[in-house]
Amino acid sequence: MAPVAIQEPVADTSRILVKPWSRPAPTSEDLEWAPLAKIDLSRFDEPGGKQELAKQLYDAVTRVGFWVVVNTGLDDDKVLRQFSIGNTFFKQPLEEKRQFPCNFAEGEYFGYRENSRWIGDTGIKENIEMLNIPKDIPALSNVPKHDIVREHYDEIASFHREVFDRVVRKLLVLISIILELPEDYLLNAHAYDQVSDDHLRYMIYNVRTQDEWDRAQGYSLGGHTDFGSLTLLFSQHIAGLQIRTPEGQWKWVKPVEGGITCNAADTLSFLTNGLIKSTVHRVVSPPRDQINVPRLGLLYFVRPGENTPMRTVPSPLLERLGLLTDEDKDPNRPVPTGTEYVRARVRDVHYTDVVKKREGTSFDFKGLKVQNYYA
Ligand SMILES: O=C(O)CCC(=O)C(=O)O
Ligand SMILES: [Fe+2]
Image (cartoon, rainbow, N blue to C red):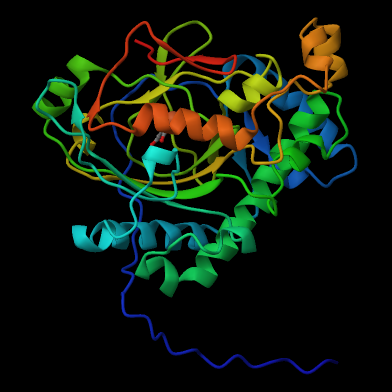
């Protein structure tokens, strides 16, 4: 028998103590929850499993736009540890958090986003703070890290990679199967080792009074689509997220124990000429029994990168559905890269001191067009 390595406990030399965070109590209010498909990723490697899961995912990605993955193999203790690191970060002094702000002038989203912007003319500020952490690849190692990220980097980086490997990779394979493309087609277009603006996000909605929520929401309810290809939301218990269902009703998203809520976003919709649905969603005031609890979030955003042309993919399914145009098939037609598109979008939305609702307007970057505002 091979000798078993005995691991000495390693002294924690970090300066910043991460206090364990746990999920607050779920709401006891009877909300109208959106029915979402549950995709069991433990079946992915079974014979025929991928094909079966792809069938189950079809309606979710083409019509609903939101679904839940379960049995991902990600250990919930590791998930809670990431929530705890995020929570500890947000409790740090503003000067510390402000050290590395998002560079919105360039459409760059890595770093800290402060809750400093005014919402229209309401006199209320946004209540969201976030810290976006890039992929753990050499080409992005120069992106500056806050102390808490540096001190816990091994753990954060391995979580980042594990989320990609256990969830993102599998979803990109399933969607490639749906599109009748080679299984690794979309994975290659979003490869972990290539430069892209993928990020792990710690996010917090700070507590507001009902009156503040009402005033902010009277101006805008914040309906939007996400900018990249896929968004993963780790389970947390504060309600607030709502999706606009295919029937046009707003329904709440219920947290699933051990599950991850996923949604398709704009660039995946562009790459499939609209077949994959980028669903409109928003975060509204939590129910009464949760309104005094900060809404801590942990998310992963998948974006196409520098080496991904924003051209409809050569899918036989899209061809049959009449969604592949001659223009799409022309490899010489110049198109932006994923990074160019995403940065233009981030700059357009976030490079401002006052958040405007921009009713009736849309964003158009070299022919890639999305609506800015959904009521
Ligand atoms: O916090 C959530 O549940 C969703 C947040 C969201 O929609 C976003 O960050 O784009
Ligand atoms: Fe979103």
